Length: 437
Image 1 (cartoon, rainbow, N blue to C red):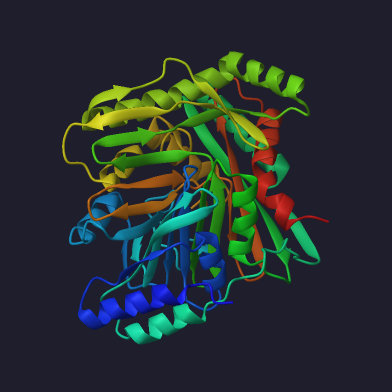
Image 2: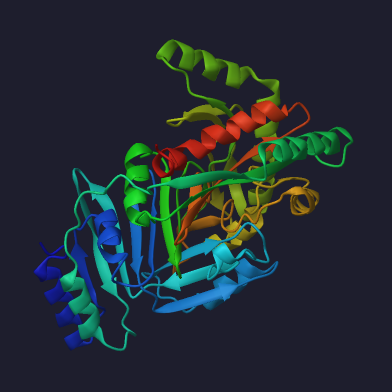
């Protein structure tokens, strides 16, 4: 059964013939579009938010890349000619220099993509309501429309079957505990206030799961998260992040830092007790306050008003509960989303504080290439509006292996064994799908 209604294809064709903007109303499920197109339409990129808005990009009409300390400013410059209604999908690595590991080949330090076909849509009751647009600059519109018409409604997403597989930790668990102990020593000596240390788990297998089938399972299990998938070459970066780095809508700016974590309980009584203990934990409150104060200080120069909660709230996910603070402000002047991204990244929730010292410590001590983990994925339009989530609860799916990432915020009172347990909880969303036995 065709996925895209004939009326949508005909409306797009008529727009091209008349020289109008090629856009049509379209009520297709965005994840079904991503799943249908991921093996036939070139690179697919996807982003959704907990409020029910999603953006899907099929193929690449134009791609802009940048690296270095001014990478976000350079991306903004490349997008200045973008019409207000057009959306670019954006993504970036933790490091200004970009990924170096070969598994991340094709992923830039920062990039913005104008897709050949874009779907911007929002959940409407049990369905979807949105618009589909084809890039006016494509060389052969008829071929694009024919490819869209050929997309079939996909079968329900399959549970990944990776067959025989081997799971390995990088670095080893023992080595990572030593990294945490070294970080605690650095913090107690006064050279750092906080630093986030990450580790990775690889699942090597002969069978590659379909990335957007995997994302469909994540989106179903974690509906309050930001879902994302970014295809590049032979790999796809997928995840379900609980954390908004920053969004801009007109003159309203929002950020939602999370820091301080605990497991969920087995029942309601235990779960509430763990939540109360997290709210009362001096260690976790200090970790959270460091992040919130830094985010507020960095947004302050851009805003005429900034509301920062005096106390954190609990944000409960399926496997973890976090301390959460929703920050909202009014911009004092014209400010592009990418200006805000450049001011905030990396927050102490993924890097540490002081920022430069923490990043240098991570580069010295961490034994993995984070790639886009703890970077960001989102969208921005020609008016400067958009949203970017931090790349968390995520993995890179390659031809013969998946790499899953997790980290923990280290402060003076951190215990290596407790931090290890926290990373295991954060691995669970993807590992439960990729390494089921």
